[in-house]
Structure formats: structure tokens, C-alpha cells
Image (tube, rainbow, N blue to C red; front, side, top):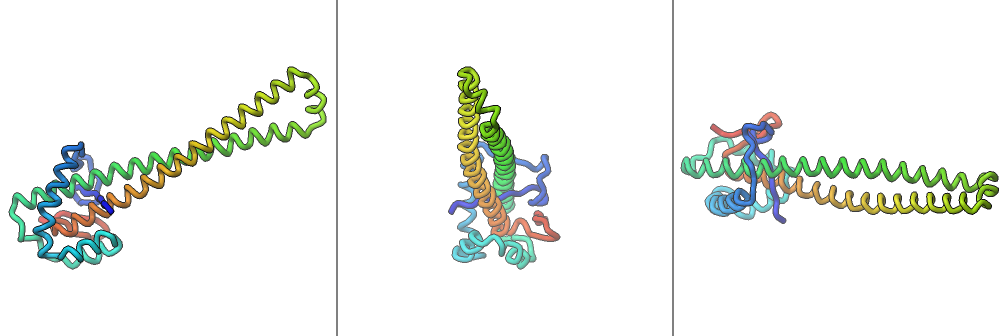
Length: 206
């Protein structure tokens, strides 16, 4: 499964000055850099180890803490390319965080709307049980108005429920994207040897 992650100056910080825009060509560049540099990293970590760590992000901290010295196997140009790639993946992670946050807010809003509309329908049902309603219902105008109001309230609730279910699926998908982006970012930072984890933060090597 394709995984993704984030980085900034302290690879985990989200400062604006370190953010890199990620249009399609940057995404393409990141794929190219990743494929070119991953082959060189293979001799250091091994493909099987890399694949395992990519799927098990809980081990990221433990593995990266074993890399004590800066990576000297890459040229200065390669190291800059790695940092660029990590920054691109980092900003993709930031974007997925924002999308997940937005999706979560939409779910919360629709849940509130659904509960509010359910209360409105319950009020109409309660009104139906009152003796006065039975008498008034004999009036055709009143009866038509009540039926119209009830149907409108029910249609509104049905629409809200439909949107609510859709929003929950979007939120779930956004959460998956966010987790994958985080994993890819951390994996790339770890395997490159250009970043390390310390005091709860990802940091660049000198």
C-alpha cells in the first residue's frame, strides 16, 4: 500500500517558511527522487527491512535512534535531493491533516443537524397525539398544512442522514490518507539517514 509522510525544519514542525508547495510536477519529482535514491539506500538497510518498517510505523522511533552518525554515503547533491523529497512528503502530510480536520468538522455539523431534525419530527409526532390536533385535523386546510410540514421534515431528515453517511466515509478515507502520508514521510526520513528522532521531534542532521 502506497504510504506517505511529512517534514519541515525540525522535520515534525510545521513552520510556514519550511513548507514546500506540492503540485503535480512536485509529486512526479518526488516519485523520481524516491526511486533513484531508494536503490542506493538498499545496501544500507535492505529492501526487506525497509518494507517491514514502512508497514510498521510504530518501530520508526526505535530504528531511527540506532542511526547515530550522519549519512556519508551520499553526495551533497543527493543529500539536497533527499531533503527536498522529505519536505515534499512532509507538506503532503500537512495537507492530509487539514483535509481530515475539515472532514471531521463536517461530520460533527451533520450529526448536530440530524439530531435537531429528529427532535422536530418528534415534536410533530407528539402533536399528533393531542386531542386538539384531532379536532383541528378535521379542518382540511390544517390537515394539508400538517401533512406538508411533516413530509418536509421527514425529507429533510432523510437528506441529512444521507449526507451524514457520506461525510463519515470521507472522514474515514481522509484518516487513512493522513496515516499513510505520515508513515511515508517518516519512512523516507528514516531510510535517508538525513533526519533523526529526538525529544519527540524529527530533526535534520547537520
